[in-house]
Image 1 (cartoon, rainbow, N blue to C red):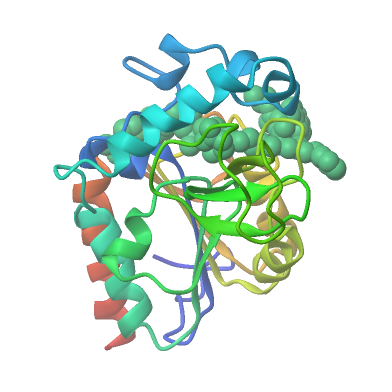
Image 2 (image 1 turned 180 degrees about the vertical axis):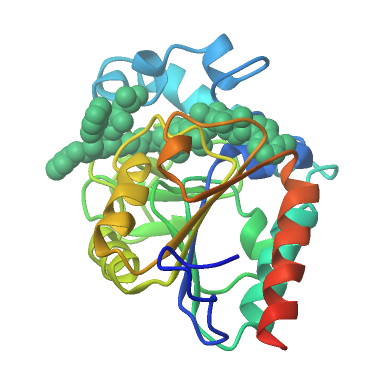
Length: 248
Ligand code: BV8
């Protein structure tokens, strides 16, 4: 595992990990594309855009209520890939930042702390009047009031819809510009700006880029290294290699 210029990944290297729906599939949560994906049962335009929410909030809320209930199901828990990344954060001498496109809380449940949910969180609701964000673990409807401004019919899932700006983009681009290793796990590389991160990193010319995915993604050829297979197998093995090399 050598960086672009062939030099070894140093023990204190800064690591940025981008995760997508593929890392949570073996935990029992559907991905978006592909067989059994969310987009098989729902049209993106009907459930994941601000226009859809304005047009038909009940259908949008039903989409997220269903996913929230599933996420809170007792059989859903982090898998070996989530746990390996949490261990990497604990034991790696340098900084490890997880940037996830996922709105589930499996990284947190695995123990990851240095984490950015660039597309929001399913277990939170946001007030469209005062922008307050509230923990939310039950169905959400227009009858609920915002606990901060008492506004009614103002709460929406705290997620980023298509056409909306993802969260914490400045912090993400700063980390991408400074990283020595960029690792993408379980993402198809079809949704921007996340799909463009590998090019942002390559432009610095200082970082090694690795894709761990079940199959080659749409941006797979842009990575210096690709390893294909289930995340629950590939991620723990890759993390063990990294930790062995850093002697930590
Ligand atoms: C924005 C939250 C601008 C809600 C989500 C440039 C070019 C083209 C289009 C655009 C562009 N720039 C912007 C766009 C438009 C759009 C976009 O990218 N459209 C796509 C469809 C073409 N992007 C946006 O709208 C973004 N916003 O650009 O704002 C802006 C600028 C200024 C001011 C205002 C606005 C916002 C995008 C975010 C939308 N919200 N999620 C929700 O979850 O409901 S996106 C959602 O879909 C996910 O978060 C994720 O990002 C994406 C799904 O992708 P993946 O996670 O990769 O999942 P997928 O199913 O596709 O793939 C799974 C992979 O895992 C597969 O490769 C599979 O092989 C693999 N896998 C499966 N099992 C396993 C596995 N791997 C390992 N192990 C396994 N077991």
